[in-house]
Image 1 (tube, rainbow, N blue to C red):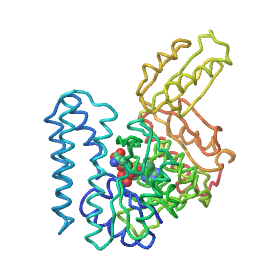
Image 2: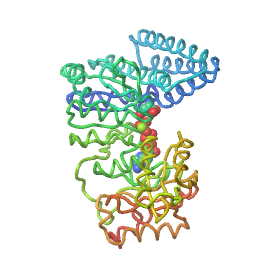
Image 3: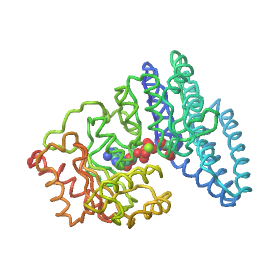
Image 4: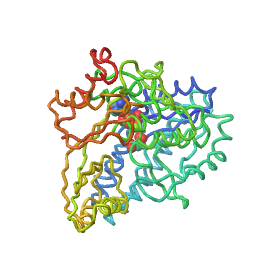
Length: 460
Ligand code: ADP
Ligand code: ASP
Ligand code: MG
């Protein structure tokens, strides 16, 4: 079997879903499990409605849902024939339930992460329902399975952790038997706790769902269908000259996703890697392309040790300086203990004799964190930074690499705040000001992928 996941733009309207049906029809012989995202923009609209209700504004919240109801009705009307009425009835019932939920939230005037997840999950319910009807009308035997009956997770709402062993058992029981005679359609992004309470895997989490399902069912391949040709040498929306990569290793893709390449959710690669299942990223608007294949060992691009460049905005740098109340050997341990207690993961670390600088990509709980650090150190916080990561397997062993990276940054007049290199041989990562991203990425891309780059060769 294979898993085929469609992202938001691949299900955004009737014509996108028609294209999706053709992609599925061409692969029926491979026993696909279709994992659907919500139609583009729907998850954000649902979260906005829940937040409006939480702020006590029921009219705003309900107007948001009415607009989502009409959008899905319009897709059903355009895409479906005999089953349009049935599909719309089901969508209407779900919208009515959601309206009740939002009214209650508006009365209490508080929206908890648990309620946010319950609201956010509707987007995938609607898109998967429409897809299942559309496939059936096109002669494909499609079964709709509620992902919440398979993807069992922790109760860390909005960032729930999958319970892999339980999921494997549930997938074997609920999905594998259906795949023998039908295409199974399910939702990405959502799961449920043991008690059946809806959870989500975090924004962009449908890619992760696809990998979790693929690992649980021992898929031959996990296909991620999106709005770009595959993984490119940089984000093509940001740098139009970026080039398509035929192959990327699991480690490279994981690193790129972690450092901001939105094309894959950062957790996607781990389940695939553990089971050694190849992941292919493809363009649903150009299904004839071969996309990018992600696997354990990938062919190197001749002439450059770099595979791709990623960046992430909205980075906060925290510098923690020892007040010398602690001996040096106790200091770092204590700093990291605070980060662990606050469940904060750090991207880049640089240390000196008395200070350590660390970066965070999310400011939730920042005050508690700095409060806990201030007990034994002087803390300073700088926001509005970016991390840029130059990624390529074996890069760390390539002589002259840091030189090439920092010369390119120097030529672009970019000041570097922090550098992290050597922790792994796969990337060089550094922190710069957000406003320097375009110059930094442009210059690095030119250095490693521009016309002159091939002539220079690795580490030249
Ligand atoms: P989907 O809704 O299909 O999950 P996303 O918007 O989450 O799609 O991810 C696709 C986007 O990822 C692309 O439109 C592109 O702008 C962005 N992206 C960032 N870095 C890269 C990269 N290196 N290669 C390809 N796409 C990238
Ligand atoms: N629909 C969810 C989101 O927008 C999950 C996804 O698209 O991957 O975050
Ligand atoms: Mg995505």
